[in-house]
Length: 386
Ligand code: PBG
Ligand code: ZN
Image (cartoon, rainbow, N blue to C red):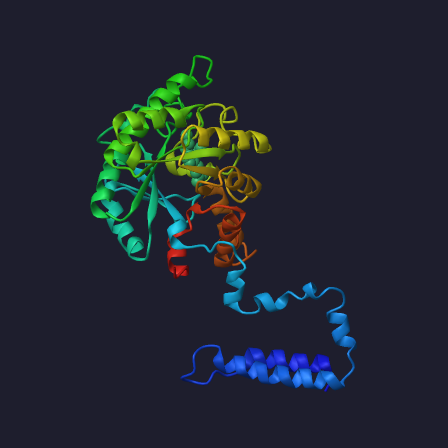
């Protein structure tokens, strides 16, 4: 028998070796492999060594397969494993009490009113959901204005949602997105000047007030996504003033890029700008240096976590964030457009949905994220066992 046919024989048997009952998993087949292997090495000491000298030509460090033959060994190759506690699930809460509306561009995701939240979340929490991020969606006519007044309405869906979730799910970590675009009549992420550009000072004053209102209502974490300059510092100072800085985590959307990947989110939240775009406050896609400066700035202003968004198109930025912020957690937001893309491709038969969900999310973790905001969270609660 030649060496190559022996190897083939071995690999066929390896795949098909029946497991003997009562024996711990792997034991039976492993001992079979060992027996076979010793046959091979005995055979090899007599046979020609051509095959061997080819396969280990050069440095012995060329031999890598042994390190990842077994599934467990493959998982050991990752610096960090994807776990349930890394995941934050986005929730869209509307101001219509019993609303439960599927968002067509965001597969499987709904906008829900307060009365639908608890029943929806109960099974997820049971399966290991640890954290959610809340987005308010004002649908009632007349609820939007130039200042985004509804953002911190004490009777609004976000503040009521924080109270409800804190009460019903005491173990759940509540993150709240802080922005004005869902609440402003013009759909921009701040207060505007007459020429349609952002008034940074007024926007920061208002957004930091909104953040404080959420924190006072019980949010564990406030996450400003507006991108106005200096808002992290303003929020941190107000949290200190209020005496709640010690129990409120401040997560900055530090490196948030403009582009076409937020479309399904804007459908869900009704937050598309009524004119223009967000290119003068969200970062230009090529702006790696700008992103690094924003990350360094926000760490300096008091962010406890920095976020990169979108995620899969910006893995180099996640890696930069990890390097620049090596002493704090790095979050990445796998945004609505990225999620919808994976679904569309899976539906078109390009790949299997679950396989791709893992591949993209593990890629984000490999790049340096220790927290992933993901619409795949409910699925991962089924797919992961840790
Ligand atoms: C609000 C906000 C957006 C997202 C998170 N917070 C939309 C935007 O900036 O237009 C996007 C999230 C997603 O696409 O899933 N500023
Ligand atoms: Zn916004």
